[in-house]
Image (cartoon, rainbow, N blue to C red; front, side, top):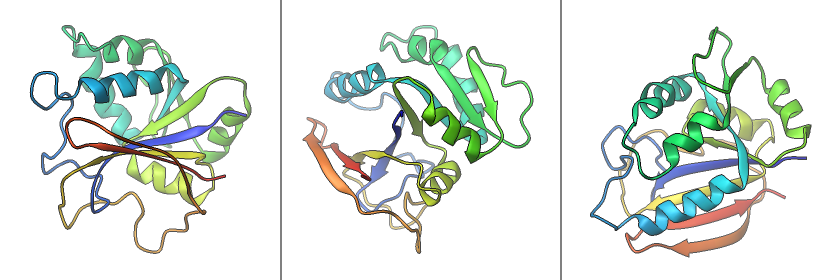
Length: 184
């Protein structure tokens, strides 16, 4: 069975909503995020599929295929990797190697197939649903040294989350910390 891994960029107070500008792709001084990028690429090697909700999928589809001068390798990886979009309304996904899923039962079935990790990032409504359905095997949280006090949270008030076991913590030069938690 494949693991479903939720990877989120998150503030110290648990906010994942980046609309206030605390997180942007590739932000930072030259070389400051090289170690974070290397870690992300290591995680990418361990997965062969990404899972998004419709809104995040559409944003990713709009952004990444247009990054023609990307030397990080992220564009090439995303364009080739299997992508799943969970949506009741989307028709043709319009992005190479993409499949639309209509329900969490289809996500559960994909987890049963052979393969590497399936990673979900962003897609907070979907992540809340995956958590509630007990489908998440691991949370990988890139914690930024920022406190916002408000915004969408990874675990909203009243969320039912299984016991979490810390399996790794890692500090990066930028002050970002990776925390990996397993649900098993």
